[in-house]
Amino acid sequence: MKKSLSRRQLLQYSLAGLGTFGAHSFSYAQQSTSRTIAGTGVAGFESEGAISNLAQTTRINNPYGIVVGPDSALYFCEVDSGRVRRMDMNTRVLTTVAGNGEKAYRGDGGLALDASFSAPHEIRFDAQGNLYIVSRDSHTVRRVDKSSGLVSTVAGTGEAGFSGDEGPANQAQLRQPHSIAFDARGDLLICDIGNSRLRRIDMSSGIISTLSGTGERTTTPDSGPIAGTPLLGPRSIDTDADGNAYLVLREGNAVFRLDIAGNRLQRIAGTGNRGYAGDSGAAINATFNGPKGIAYSAQDHCLYIVDTENHVIRRMSLNTGIIDTVLGSSERGDGPDGDPLQCKLNRPHGVCVHAGLLYVTDSESHRVREVSGLLG
Image 1 (cartoon, rainbow, N blue to C red):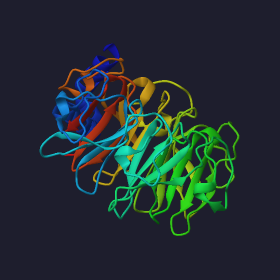
Image 2 (image 1 turned 30 degrees about the vertical axis):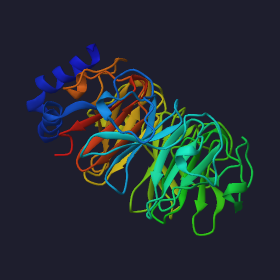
Image 3 (image 1 turned 120 degrees about the vertical axis):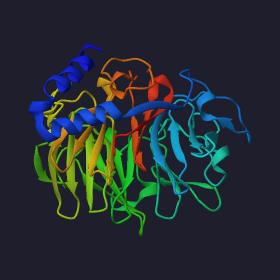
């Protein structure tokens, strides 16, 4: 609490001297509001079958990746239950759309609700509305067909390893993949963190290749070519419509912009040192502690970065390069709802932005939180 209060006091006492940016930041801090929209704070799963439950009174279990689907519903995956859940944003009803609760790699060719997923970390939809699930402990990326609901494996064999580049992705080996995103061309990017690589699947051919990373766990240089440059803990990725990818390095404690067509990467946030400093200044000089999630927001041209071990969500403006904290007090805990900067988080992982709202999976509080008033 002490760090959060001093940050708020600093904004109050120096408001006049900070000028437009200071006033802008203070306005956001005062007007934004956080609330719990799913989960009770207790880990678990109410057996639902075909029965629906109200999200705020239904237990969830260690939620990670989160995204808004093509139907405008909110989807998130649960690492500990192996399920993907759907929340109807109108009725606030929560249902399971994939996973039977068994931690395993089973179910290809069958319905998503009958399939087993092992530690799903992130989910994405392609342009056609098909759902993709990356499973850390089965070392796979799997697909749920929009029309039939049937599951298939897109990448990985179920066994950890590194193999298969320049061949079919479903015959290649991954090692603890954590994050996925579709780039501007529609190809699938995979944070193959156990192999210290960023892999790419050409979705027109199904061929997998290494986009970046060498397999070495060594410091990533501040800039260089994407191909052949080592990546220190490629943990999470998101993309924009202009052909850029934004990559979070967990052990590297930094964020890089990847110009995929230009084959260039550049550090844009984080010094590489571990810490929690730099708010209201240039993101390139800020410190993080094990960041594990990222979302690009076209609405405000900002990155929302999950600074997991600091228990906060930080926002970097791509227009100004300035970073600030928008959710979390930096003290580990559970809430309360209300002022986002007084809301304790417990190792958050997932983040997305939709229709002016920020959604965060507060993983070890077993909640999904919503922040309003950040994007105007």
